Amino acid sequence: MPLYKEHRWNEFQLAIWRIEQEECQTFNPDILSETDQKRLQGLKNPARKAEFIAARMAVQHLIESPPEIEYSDTGAPQLKNWIGLSLSHNREFAAAIVSKTHKVGIDLEAYRHRMQQLAPRYMSAQEIHAIGSNPPINSLAAYWSAKECMIKLLDAPKLDLRKEIRIAPIRMGSSAVGRALIRRNGENSLYPLYFKMDKDFCLCFSYA
Image 1 (cartoon, rainbow, N blue to C red):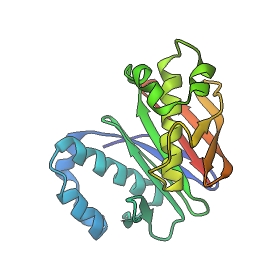
Image 2 (cartoon, one colour; image 1 turned 120 degrees about the vertical axis):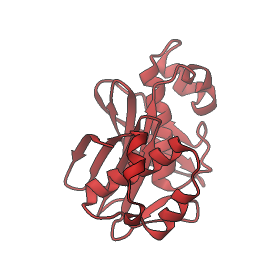
Image 3 (cartoon, rainbow, N blue to C red; image 1 turned 90 degrees about the vertical axis):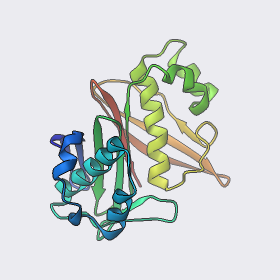
């Protein structure tokens, strides 16, 4: 499972791992926390196993030690001695971001044509209007990825994608910067969004 890309900043480290299922045969589960060993044993689908392992290998690459991952009450991963950890994957790639100083969220989405049909389920009418009647797939993926990223950052899986998470218009490129507005409990909060656009996927991450 080779490293595909990595980005390192002063306060964040991010790695993208290419998933290769055959590598599962040589993976040593003893490097995982007891909780993750049990989770891995419970996965019967080879593809899901490969995704799980690739994400942990990305974490191990970033922190240069076995990943001692535990989970919040809602299932969000947490890393011992680190403030921020977030994981994401699709069938071909897994991504991890860690931070000693900030909470973090990350999401990696493959480009899928069904996103055009699904847009009304995860985008508000204003967001759909902002990107036009025939938006490119990478733009739709960016909105999807941004909203999933915010759910992970805030550890709030019940946030309403259309009403409580609003994404400002994104100027697309190989990299992009945006903003997310979270509306909940009568309060509004703004968060930064950072995008990396690959030929195969859109990646978004944020911090608090």
